[in-house]
Image 1 (cartoon, rainbow over the protein chains, first blue to last red):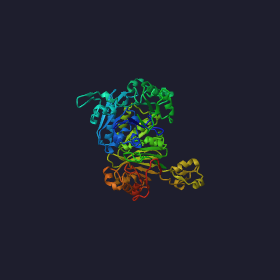
Image 2 (cartoon, rainbow over the protein chains, first blue to last red):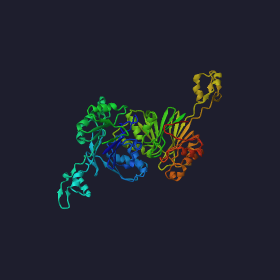
Image 3 (tube, rainbow over the protein chains, first blue to last red):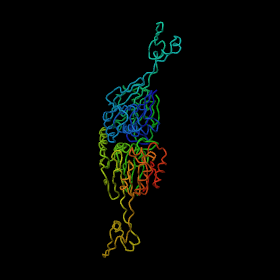
Image 4 (cartoon, rainbow over the protein chains, first blue to last red):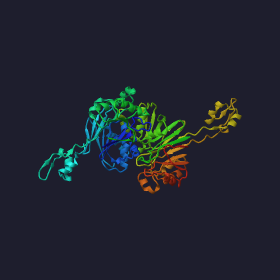
Length: 300
Length: 300
């Protein structure tokens, strides 16, 4: 299972009690932080999430509403005596921005920070539980989306057949991993006689800030949950496009074209107090749409 | 009259819903911002204060809890189409930190920012309403306090005497400014026969982050309102001093030695949820003490 908690759902200028972009993506034992707008550390605290659990931070681009909270979060992690390594994936210039601010305070963080520069479409992370990949979107400055994929679950053992074949329990992990059974006498039972396909791992795509950009459809094809910005209603399409943003209507088009299961829209302009019209508009193209709400945890 | 609104009263790590340091000092037509911790723009909005009215920002030192909110505030001012000049008084390194972040976003602010580097004890601002002066305090890195002084109010005209002497109303401003009256026939009435001393202008001293440092007493002598940090209770004196902070007991000692009218304590450690014991402790040395509370406006 994947879980996405929204810490900030607003665009550049905070308004209506809404904060700039940040999300926590949980899968397996991982807590990934995606973007880190101003106030992220307060939002983590408000929603009872512990910064110490975050091991990897992904910064989509260097507009301030996506990273101005990072230096405060890093500093507070240090003041709270963090010692475990932290990985930060971000556009190249971020490293110098952080270092300059640490130097100005004569601060050395008590934990290692590993900066990784974003570039093209790249596998950023992989372990036995999940992968994270980047893909470029189209914004006023270099900007990336991220796809989080759980690894496929292990094969399911058919208990009736396994028991009928007298397979010892300590052999089960091999079967779950896809291996055949070789009996003590040398007889072989093929794996697919004893197991069925494991459940497909879930997937989540975060598309950051982007103009309506159908080229991303290939990257996000059939994900279980798609987060797409919908900064404006379509009546503001001209403004949206001039600022390299997407309208709610267009976000629905992207979700439909990519054949995703569910669409979450966010990065709302400060001009909208009521968000419902944005969801309604997206739904005209893609019914299973929700507005990303701060503090809500979306399970995939 | 001076008014001080507290936007953040906590020390380095935000906690208990409290924010890092920031205050608005209002006098005459001025809105001065003092320090700008992370989240200051949201706090301004929460307390219905308009950033456009801020003309001068004073940053005491480059620990993040005193300035990490500045870049977000400057950026939002730009997105909100500010065109009027903004003056920022700060330690030298801040200019580069801000410029680097603007460059990374290819952002040019639509209003001029005038950076002024802090150095020693300096008159930072003066007009016909008020003055602002800096003075060094003693912290782990270079750090300054600021004193805001209203100019003395004009002399008060005695209406009975002025009327008895048949002084025309258009002459009143001259009398208020201290001039004598010269009648059309050439007769002279000295100013102090017609007016009394104007009320003394109010004063406010913000002492930023500092170890207990009696040397500042000369700078803040007899101010009407003193804001002094009281990060810890005195039982933590050793820790306070190792971190170049002051205890509540010591803050009271400073207020007493300086003969100020009122003491406001702040910059509370995240370890204290209940702030009352800090005020109680300061009061053992200086009775007229209050804890600075976020959102409260202290009138002087």
